[in-house]
Image (tube, rainbow, N blue to C red; front, side, top):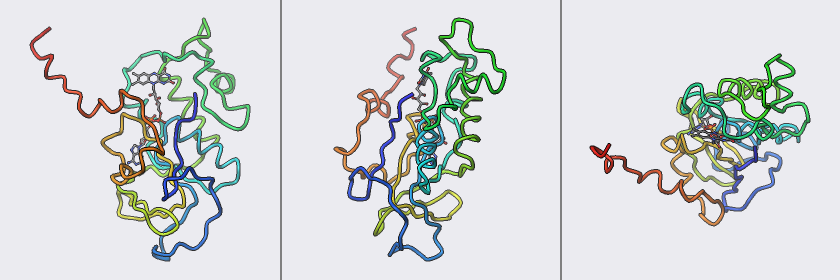
Length: 209
Ligand SMILES: Cc1cc2nc3c(=O)[nH]c(=O)nc-3n(C[C@H](O)[C@H](O)[C@H](O)COP(=O)(O)OP(=O)(O)OC[C@H]3O[C@@H](n4cnc5c(N)ncnc54)[C@H](O)[C@@H]3O)c2cc1C
């Protein structure tokens, strides 16, 4: 599964994470991290695995595998093949096949498809193994401050981060931090169908079945 998250600096530039320094404009008591990753699905967890392996101070926020756990038809099979459904990690021991071998989970007979429940369990296994602790809390707002960003958490706490990576998928557009919409559009891309989602109105099909 490819990584599709974007790391954007406050000037809208793609950022190479760097060491934390003092952050004027933030309260001294504000918790500071180098990289905040909003989203604990496959993309957020994969990005975190790479950053943490590189020794970067990164923290993931969100409900692990929430999109898959709460927004997919129960009992479905993945449409991506078994071989193409591994999360990205720097080590070679975190693939879907590695998960099956480590946990005694049977590999699908034809080796092409994986059940939803198996993929969710794999995501949880990957998170514990490669990412560790996740901030299971919603980010309500992302504000630009000197030298970085201030994230407002749903419990009222603030966290500062030099770089923010948004990896929160379409199923969670209603919970996207409000100021993320202010990022320069030339610095990120969205699939064409994504833009149609908020305007998609099923009422025009009413009574036609
Ligand atoms: C029916 C269906 C079938 C699919 N089948 C496949 C398939 O077979 N193979 C495949 O590769 N892809 C498939 N996809 C696509 C897949 O869902 C996405 O590509 C993938 O899940 C995106 O993962 P993600 O990490 O971006 O987000 P998700 O897994 O959706 O996770 C979103 C994360 O963001 C967090 N979040 C959201 N808002 C906030 C906030 N404000 N603060 C903190 N956290 C927040 C959530 O808590 C969660 O952790 C399918 C999609 C659908 C709808």
